[in-house]
Length: 212
Image (tube, rainbow, N blue to C red):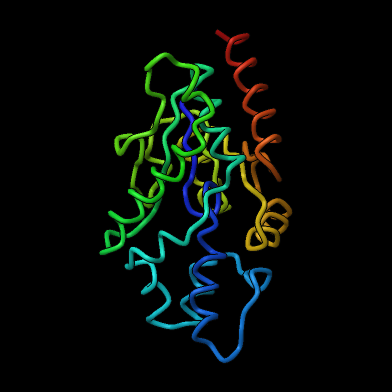
């Protein structure tokens, strides 16, 4: 299968880091659970104005962003088991994008669990494994793993793929409202952890083999 894995808030803790940077300079500190808006992009802009994304243009910001080790190990598991996996991001082309790519790849490859088992074969991820696009439904693939419900909807509707939604505070309300009002079924599956995602991927791969 071709698997597309979102970077921000799936493979890393982007929202938590951005919030921490703003909290350092703010009179009132905000908590990650306040991000209950359907679109956390709008929440940051409404709360911090035009400077909402300024920290992301700095190398120091991306040095602070932590990688989710479980999701990272899942990415290597996908590669080891014959799946093609790409990291996708809707990042804007700003001054921080090169720092983001470099820092993300460096952190991800630190968790390569197969580095000592491959007799010189390199399983590391490289720049060509990162796709930058706000329109993720235009990317060819079988599965999208994302934290944004709108991306999952569009991927299911237009790309006709399966979307795995990583549960985060900002998509809880959106999930409930969309499912109550949806006029057609969508292939969107919720997951709380990397282990749940792995189980879903195993089921999808088995079904793909059976249908072949």
